[in-house]
Image 1 (tube, rainbow, N blue to C red):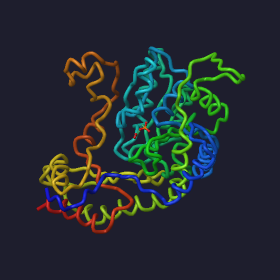
Image 2: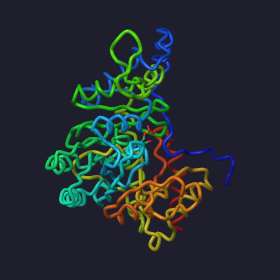
Image 3: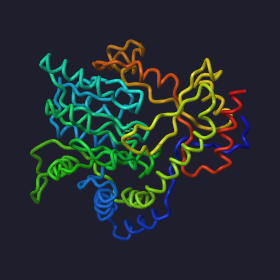
Length: 393
Ligand SMILES: Cc1ncc(COP(=O)(O)O)c(C=O)c1O
């Protein structure tokens, strides 16, 4: 590896310019707290930009998912249906609550939850007399799941849908914003996301009671009396006023970030799409993907190298790329997957069920997420592309 070459990261933070001004406002008001005017403004501006009328700023996307699952009444022994191609934060709250995930495979046209598998599995579950308490589709890599179809299928059984839109802020589905479906949408502002607060999340819904109840639970479920009284158990999940200030600056540049992410995708696509053995993540016809990450699939026999090999070659050039998420049904933490066999992993095993899985397995095996940072210069793109082209040779 040449030490002179600067590192190109996968998707680093990119500040918009106004963040420090808002942080200064937070200091001046002395709201150095998990509430305050910046949090209120961040929630309101988030609603205006996404079109989802009620929003609650939280400490992480996982916290937002936990609250949503709590509000739909998940209990020990319940099942939830989730996408197998996702990040684990999508489902860990279900495991905190003693529920068992059922992981549904992806389809080829969007890489999101396969709706025919969902429909079949719900039919079977209904016959067995045990329907899931929630269906949680993930919008993978900045592309919305097929919200209307999922909703239509779930409505038959009155099952609530919680959209994991952690990766899709800025994408659209039939003209609506990402996460604007089901009971609620869950968003993440983790450092690698399209906009970031360094760490943080949002729960958003068109139902004011849902958000108000989540707000109450996120503040240790403190009863509305002058002294500290608790009739229920809650969480300490609110977002800090300082981080909300960062979020406000970031929201102001969301549209620019989506535009740049899509340009980056197109730049890769225009040069690499004709190379035998490389395919790009498709864009489903029902919306516009944010292209949070530009993802390719490699067919090693044709390309001459597998995705791991290309990842290593890029790494030698100090370029960060990442495999596609390892599907949840393949994770060693689950009991009926006997891979992780260390003493440590045997101690902590959880029950799960998989519905299909071969598509997500293939995407994991052949997929590679390419650097997609919105601050990448033309020279950085050239360095990445020339390294990939060298692999072809
Ligand atoms: C699909 C998905 N779900 C959930 C999360 C969890 O969000 P957070 O890291 O903010 O807890 C993430 C990202 O980190 C994610 O990519």
